[in-house]
Amino acid sequence: MNKTERKPRNTNYQTFYKDAIDKKQGYVTKDGMWAAIPIMGSKQMAIIHNGERVHTSKNFDFARSYILKESRKSK
Image 1 (cartoon, rainbow, N blue to C red):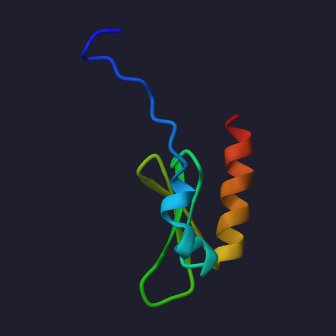
Image 2 (cartoon, rainbow, N blue to C red; image 1 turned 180 degrees about the vertical axis):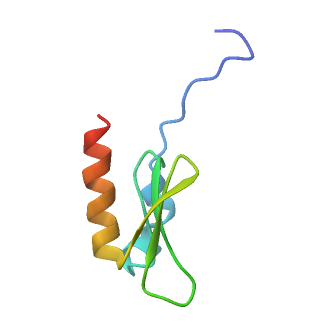
Image 3 (cartoon, helix red, strand yellow; image 1 turned 135 degrees about the vertical axis):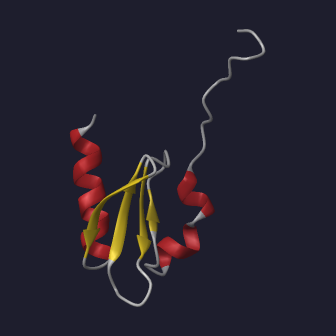
């Protein structure tokens, strides 16, 4: 492996956002590929995948279930 090549990080992003997940203010997968962020002024959550907004859910629980369902499809 030369200097320009890097190993992928083995980071669990859920540890960084533990408080937000516990308070149902947002969600992120362990690999960081999927996230649910709140839309200002509402209970709705925007679903982000690879930096693109792909879906809008009406609350945290629906957003989390959508992410888990879609992440299983891609595996």
